[in-house]
Length: 117
Image (cartoon, rainbow, N blue to C red; front, side, top):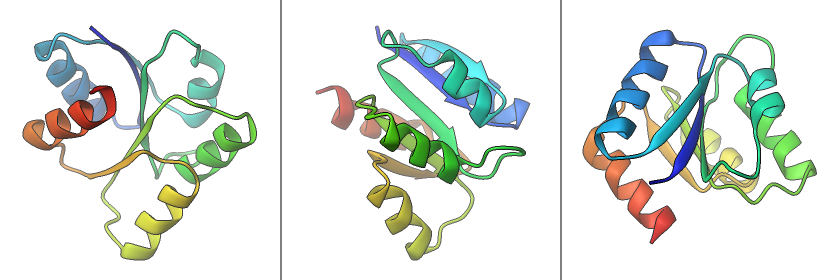
C-alpha cells in the first residue's frame, strides 16, 4: 500500500481519484489547492497527483516550488490541457508522468506500476 496525496480544486476529481486509489489498495489524502499540498506534503507520501489549473497557486507554480525544494516524490500531473508544449513544460519541471482528465483507471494503474515497480 502506498500513500498518495492529491491536489485538485475539483471535489469530483479528488473523490474519483480517491475512490480508484482505494480500490487499488492505496491510502490517499486530498487537498484543494497547491498551497495546501505544499503545507501537507511529507516524506511519508509516496506519490503526488497534481492538477495544473487551480485557483491560487497553479500546478506549474507547485512544480517549480517542489523542484526548488529538491523534491524526490514522484509527481503525476493531471490536466485537461493536452497541448504538447504544456506536457513538455511539466516534464522539464520534474513531473514523472502526465495524465489527461477524465481519469482512466487503466491508465492510472499503468502509471502507478511504472512509478512503483
